[in-house]
Image 1 (cartoon, one colour):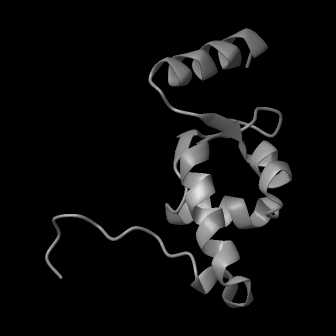
Image 2 (cartoon, helix red, strand yellow; image 1 turned 120 degrees about the horizontal axis):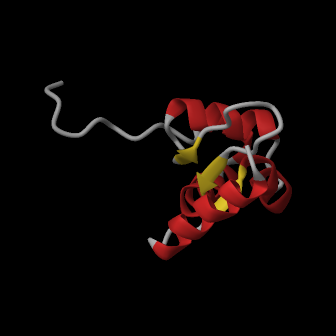
Length: 94
């Protein structure tokens, strides 16, 4: 993927009012291991805006969803992944 295409995608998200960060950028900024962020993304806890099509192209995620997950995680760090739960499905019968 061309770096200009990636930059254009980031600008499109920003124009929509969405704060964008890469998975590894979020790991550095918030001090959460990348594998944890990856698991949160797979479970739907953090919102993936554009998945990585390959190893050299970063995954773009919504920074606000990361901030919320990290806030929950850090309120009770001893519980780890049990603290942060995926969102409940809306409109489905239980």
